[in-house]
Image (cartoon, rainbow, N blue to C red; front, side, top):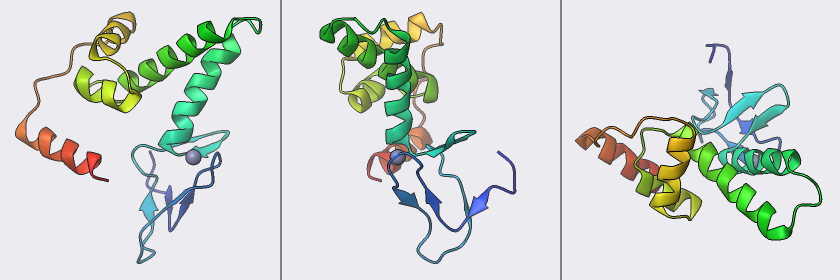
Length: 131
Ligand SMILES: [Zn+2]
């Protein structure tokens, strides 16, 4: 990310949610957001888009449960790729799935296991969780 990408307020092009500081100091794009050629998107919309992309790749006559499964798998893969250093349990909670499903996605993507959490990482995770 370049130094020039600062804004007093970021607005998600998907859902319109905004992020910024109360004192209107310019801030970089929030960590969990993504700026792309199609616009910038908050984490919720990024997850949505990852799931939608998986569905678009599926045959349009796929049964509903197959599509639901694809969507869930895409979500887990998105989350595990985004935060590979988080434990499978943490990612599972974010995706409302089981840790085993996250482990399988990690293997599928050939991502390494997360490092053992350091005290700082734990503190950071708490801070993120209480956002
Ligand atoms: Zn959004």
